[in-house]
Image 1 (spheres, rainbow, N blue to C red):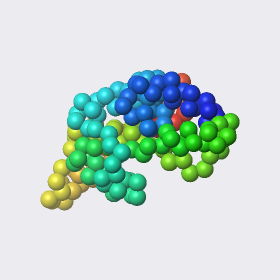
Image 2: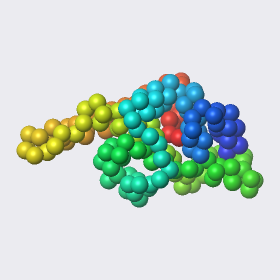
Image 3: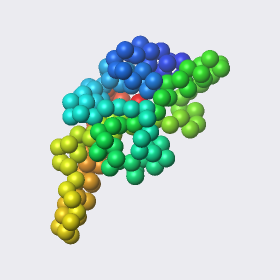
Image 4: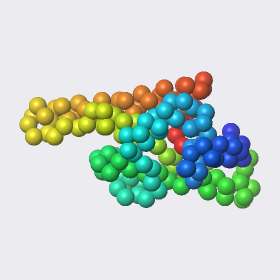
Amino acid sequence: MTVDELIKAHESKAGETPLNDVFGDGYLYAENRVYRNIRDKAVALGFEYTADDFCDYNVCSLAALPEILNARKIPFLKNAGVFRKMSAKGLGNAAVSELPNIRPNYLLHESAHGIAHATYPWPAGESSAGERERVLSIMLAEAYANAVERVARYSTGDDGSAHA
């Protein structure tokens, strides 16, 4: 798909969520039931979405997860404006797959982590048995988030990404 085609799809569903600055978020929310259900469940569990990188997620996302879960805040990048600027500069016919270094948002993945943690929180690792259970719960949460992404990719009948 071209930049202009994706902008048109993004703007057609811009009012579906309050995250209009997240490229494709409204479209995924409206068209992908897995994406929508995971986002709705995360919000119901008290998670919110923020453009404030309060946990240095954009520097080291793996180290940020505990702070994301404790704060119940999922950070995002305002990336929709980049696509609009590309179109305005005459790059609207460029295939998105050919554009280098466009950083996606991982709202679905991090929302799934929030659900997993709210359902099965990491236990304290005071003993070796507690530490094993903590590692297991972290691994299960990661497996859940990855499985949610995979199911979301195929829920619309194609193998496209469910990242916003």
